[in-house]
Image (cartoon, rainbow, N blue to C red; front, side, top):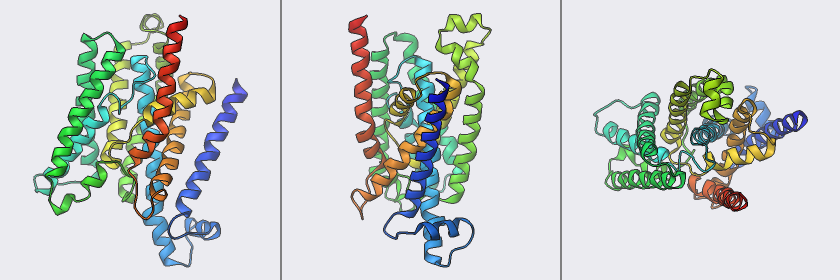
Length: 337
């Protein structure tokens, strides 16, 4: 088991480094490996290549890694919280709530009501995600069927999406012309300062989640067992809610809605590792989310070049079959029980 875990981490890191290099070097203007290394080391003679790499491709690729990992980790915590493999920020409407809050913030900013910056965007998305999560939790106290709760979460997502679409359709201000592109999900247009804000928020949350590995491990075995082990279950549940909302909100703030990553990646990583232990699942899920979103972003910007697909379109194509497999496996397990 230990050897399998080591090999799995080695594979994830290799894939992450490989696709990162491919992502920042390939495109309409190809950059050779030699030139790429020179630029990253502070050299490079081609000023155009330097600008393309450092101002456009590198921030976009880093955003895909960081936000992809954040979304996968958010999904893992929601699955742990609800003890269900199809619970995820997109399915439960949490991403849609964050998206609605960001859209409202952009509207207010365009009309001069507030000053807009990366921190305010992240805060607005967190509030929206937390509001949607609160609605789901309120329903969970009344509904004991997880399948029905998922349906309610989907309905919350549809309501938030519909309101957001209305806002986007009536948003004619030149300052938010990119709102339509953002509303379908994209890592395009990421700036270095936005990447820095993302990194601070996400890695702080990742550290907090990793420090909770032991309590989460006990929680996975049941609330009664966790209480017997001296775990403050209420505090752990609140922490998981806040951290998952923060992570999914951060993604929605900077990349818009990204679907199915939070469900598909934890499932695939668990299969790869052969274990569900949080101490290895947490970092592996983060790495897996980064790899998944880099690949999806490369497909999004090259499959229909020179036009670009929404990132959520690609992640849905790649992730939806995984969700179907999960549901079929769950149904088979029930029939065999």
